[in-house]
Length: 149
Image 1 (cartoon, rainbow, N blue to C red):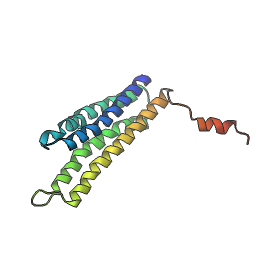
Image 2: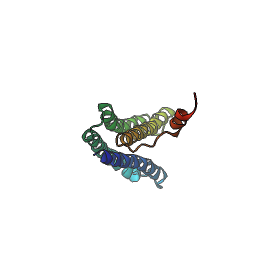
Image 3: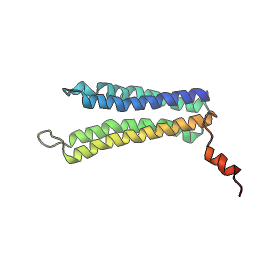
Image 4: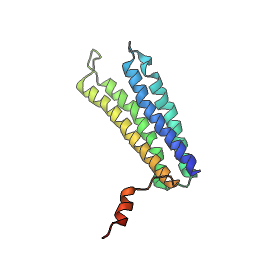
């Protein structure tokens, strides 16, 4: 079950990386329309939450420490925050619907929150590898241990 936890956490990491690609697809789509970010939205609001729950479930089944199980479920909270940040950014336009510096700054927090979520998933994957005994050994530690005092 621990190796399955490693695999599912890696899949979650890949899907998060794909999320950035899909955001870029939306950003570079011309002409821009409401459906430019459709794949980004579906991945972020359906695929990522489902895989996050499955990852946390696998963490629990792998008898991971409670802290790791909590860390595995944390991306859901960060994903829930994403549309709220986007709505705040959209609401911060001027009377003619043009972006304001405040709205753009808030919109930037959407990307920052995504980076934080990826960082969390990287941590979950590393911890899953360690739990499964698949983490590489730290060569620096081995060198220090063999050096004379």
